[in-house]
Amino acid sequence: MKRIAIFASGSGSNAERIATYFAANDKVSIELFLTNNPTAGVIERGRRLGVPTVIFDKKTFSKTDKIVQLLQNQEIDLVILAGFLWLIPENLIKAYPNKIVNIHPALLPKYGGKGMWGHFVHEAVVAAHEKESGITIHYVNEHYDEGEVIFQAKCEVVPSDTPEDVAKKVQLLEHIHFPEVIEKLIE
Image 1 (cartoon, rainbow, N blue to C red):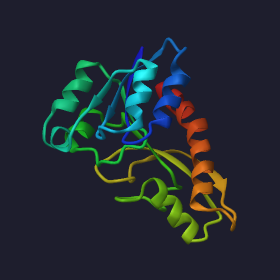
Image 2: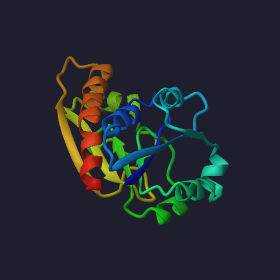
Image 3: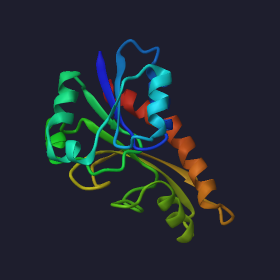
């Protein structure tokens, strides 16, 4: 049995998609949702799905070993970042080398780094008149969006697309591919 913890800062649509994808899989268990945002939509999704959710603050996350200890106590095998906005501290990276996976709403290395998340990415893609965007699933290291790429998927961006249009196309790719890539990593 592989035990997964999912970190999210926002609505949690990817966390829910992953949880529902693995719901009938007896080899995978979604053990926890974790969030840094006490008003995040992922909290309600966790409640509805019966996934325990842990809320933490910056100091607990970055300056203590409490989150690492929690994950280890829960015997977590894989950490998934699904719309989690904080830089992962060194103690967590060391505790889970090549076991922390993030999804980014662009084709890295373009449109990555601090501050490049959600609508900021899609606005930048449209402003640059890109012809495509997509998703990047990658391992996490000590820098924003610089870990080894595991998988990318592309979508077309047409001149009439708004950032909201691009967001919808990218989210569709996320929901299709993220659970499948996680499944392959576990196998």
